[in-house]
Amino acid sequence: MALFGSISYDVLVAFALGALGGFAAELITNKGNIEFPHTTKKNYFDAGFLANIFLGGIAALSYFFVLDTTDAYKFVGAMIGAGVGGSAILTAIKEKISGSITQEIAEKQTEQAEEAKNDLENIAKELDQLKTKMGITKAAAQVDVVGAIDTLKNNAEKRAAAIQRSTEKAKRKLQELQ
Image (cartoon, rainbow, N blue to C red; front, side, top):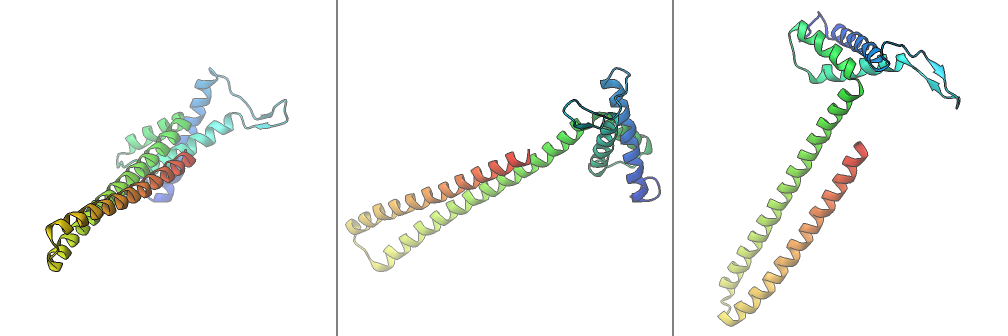
């Protein structure tokens, strides 16, 4: 729902308020002084206060799409605050997204472990049914049970190793995101 008439206008207002917050951050950081764009001694371009203004605008836009408010006063305050926070706001949003990814990975691994457990239980039931159908003697059944247990154990270890590899891969992807 558009707060100021249309969603595109809301986006422009959010960016402008964030830019204002970024300018305030420049004044706070430099104790009232403004760092103008310049080249450094190593011949690099330093955007000065323009960097904080742009960062504030981008942070406010990011926050705009996370924030859910229909109150214009809260919207204005939140966008200026996001602009002042700049990189801290962007980092917090990134961590929230990373946390969601981590939660998703944990849920998937729990699901895989549950599937492995169910598979192992089904295999054990099938072995019991097969023994009953074949009328295996008690002594022979005990030998088969030992073999079945070894097979189940090997299958469980393979599944656990696959889940471990999946976890490591997810951790590497998560580190790449950070």
